Image 1 (cartoon, rainbow, N blue to C red):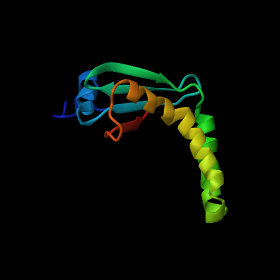
Image 2 (image 1 turned 45 degrees about the horizontal axis):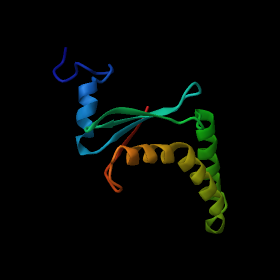
Image 3 (image 1 turned 45 degrees about the vertical axis):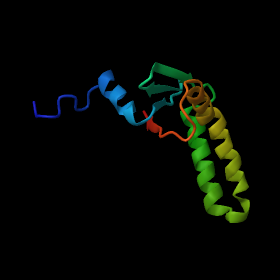
Length: 117
């Protein structure tokens, strides 16, 4: 085995993920057709799970395509259509995570690390 590649393409041990949270909470976001959720790793608490009940890969892809079209074709005067879609993503994905971070005592403005799986 090559030095430093023992875990290559394998699962990352929890202690390594936990160390990553030394600089701020790590948010592992998993979006699937079966279940979507986020795992929050923070040095001062056990891992927390946030269920993201309203988002699916198909829904997220639709929002992405719609935003791309809206921002590219409508021009600057009609970007409010894109804002509505961004708010939809915020409400279904980011807002529940931010609310959980607040309950965990993470101060506003803290560094957080997003990792999509």
